[in-house]
Length: 442
Image 1: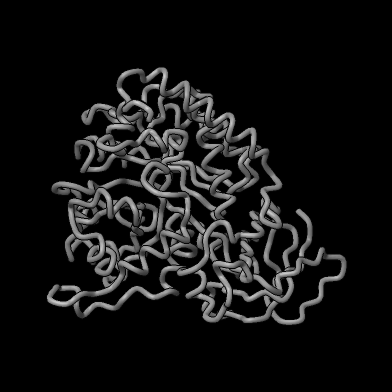
Image 2: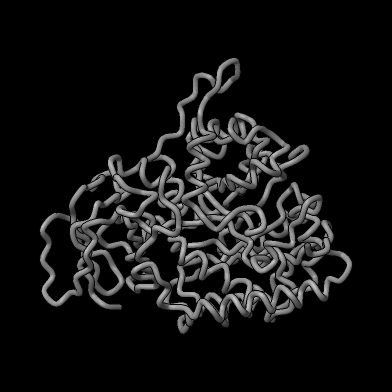
């Protein structure tokens, strides 16, 4: 961890006290943000010229099924996400998991995502879990690893916590190889994807271990998830992350808001698979109710690994419309989009005091965006520029925990060529094992 003085940047801090500064410095030392202000002095620090850049907190993805990243292009016309997942989930060996998660982590780093929730909902064996964690050890991003069931686990069969305990002792003890970057959680199927009695058993097991929990709700059909019922069981709160929930009622939203239960909203996925409710209305109503909403990719076969695009789409879809019950709701603002992609994601993962804003004392998870690139210039309103114009290609520099992973537009912490070759090889062998269950390649 070197010491850096990031100089003369346009700082979008996502900190209401610091605000947005058109010309300011950020001092980083020992992996932490030391000071934010104008004309800072840090003798001995490496000077980073940000005079033509936007400096902002690294993005936070609150829901990413990383094990299937190498399978993102198995989707074909008439053969979409779920058929492709079900056809291949059993064909992944541990090495394929390592290569898939590595591909996802490196792409996140390239795209300015410095914290990711690896929602592992196909943990097939202890060796598969170890492979994912080895990828996190080598991937250098901040993360939650949420250990979960294997794909297509019978609905009446509870998750076995035996290996979760083994993982916790082996990977998350005092001598953890992660250096504080990765923490452990679990993802459970919840009432929509499993039996309620099973969910009760699993929640009790997670509660005894003090592990944060994440659950899905269905995006099509009728939801069995009732937030007031979960509240009555004592399950709602900041340590339970709910994803999708397009079919939520006003009672559901109010229960989530009063208990501080966060929502992960996967913009592209909700639009493509959201048969349980209008995603535009769902987003507006969740925000209006005071629910803390974060943004996510879901899976690489559903959306690009690009939270800038997620912000852009959320802003474009986040408007009330006439002759509907959204007509009196507030439109989604640029600032709110940025908050959903940064501090709200950090808080959803229990990391609000660690990352998600440029705040002295927090860890130095920062990105620098070239404001003089062809598709960004000329820069006027900073928040509008981030949400409407920026793409991952404009991310010049990425720091995680004070370490530079990307600089001058190039990933400096990874052998990208090897990552891509390994991913292609993993994809080929998974397809071969899956055989005729996959759509033919064109």
